[in-house]
Structures are given as structure tokens and as C-alpha cells.
Length: 175
Image 1: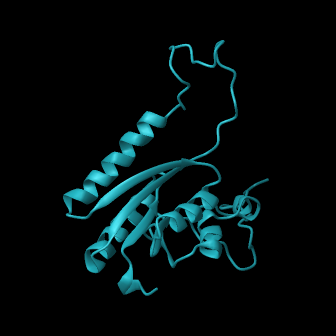
Image 2 (image 1 turned 45 degrees about the horizontal axis):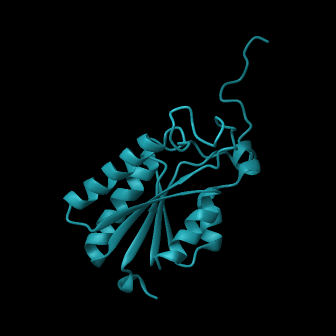
């Protein structure tokens, strides 16, 4: 598969500025390639919570994840912005480990390209948590374009002699 033959671009979103930049980049590519865009939001698994007897929530209906309606609204708003540009856009929601769900969804929809933002953890958090984008790049069934925040918005890069980013920003003077 070549980039020219890409018909579907997958854009995972967490509704951050980095995701917005990735969606903008994906829109530009979709216009150039005549491709459609699918916005995907992956929710983290929520631990099981006992509900009222009968398995219903106190409202009398099935349990609803907190924030689900707000996330759906943001997802639909993002899709509508792309549609206003004349780009065919669909949305999807899933729950699970973010990188696993992104890769699985890319396979499911036969995505030709994944465009995602990079607003990852830095320093010691990145060492222990890992980067979602890095994991997606390693396992994706198609090319992955990782769009960084603008230089002025991005975190500083640790010095080579401080690979974990543990150096204090300003020395403690007078102690």
C-alpha cells in the first residue's frame, strides 16, 4: 500500500491541542489524497462499580460512563469541523488500552495512515509509562504520522547528560 492509495486516515483523539493539530494535519492530507477521516476516541477502562439491585443505575436506566456524553459531543464537533471543509468524516468510540485499541481499529477499518498528536509524558514519567505514539508506531498495520505541538508549546528536550529529565530547572541558591 502506498500513501497515494490511502482512502481512510485514522485520527485518534483525546481532545487535546496535540490531537487538534493532528486532526488539522489529517484534514490537509485527506484533501490532497481524496481520503476520508475517522476520528477515534479511546476511553480508559472504568473499574466495575456495583449499581442498584437489578443492575440499573439510580436513574433507572443502564449505567453510563461519566464524561461519555461530553466526549461524544467533542467527537461529533470535531467531525463536523472536518465535514465543513468538505472532508468525509466518521467517528468511533472504544474502551481499553489506548495503543491496543488504536492499532485494532486501524486494522478493522483498513486505515492507510494513522495521524496522531504527541503530547506525551516527559522525563521519568515517559520512562515508566511509555509513549502511546511509540507503541502505535511499533504495532500499526500502516504508516503513522506523529504530529508534535508547535515548538513554543512543546516541552523542553532533556540534555544528553540528563536522559530522564531530572535536572532542576533553577538551582537552589543560598541553601
